[in-house]
Image (tube, rainbow, N blue to C red; front, side, top):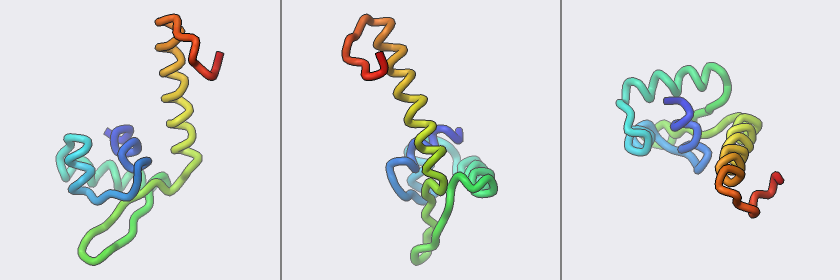
Length: 88
């Protein structure tokens, strides 16, 4: 799904083959998701030799995803009584 693709791309540039390996998706599905993400200017691509590499185009989107993940971790900490959460 697109969230898995975004999480993978937030770690750095990847080709479709590696995105398929990381996400467990099929090449055709990953390519369709990437096309939609590119159309929405969330992901960008560049050609290197015979590969197309994809990366996050909009760092604001990456920041929103990171913030959401941080808050999910905080929610888990609050339920477990963890006092290390920076958002408390």
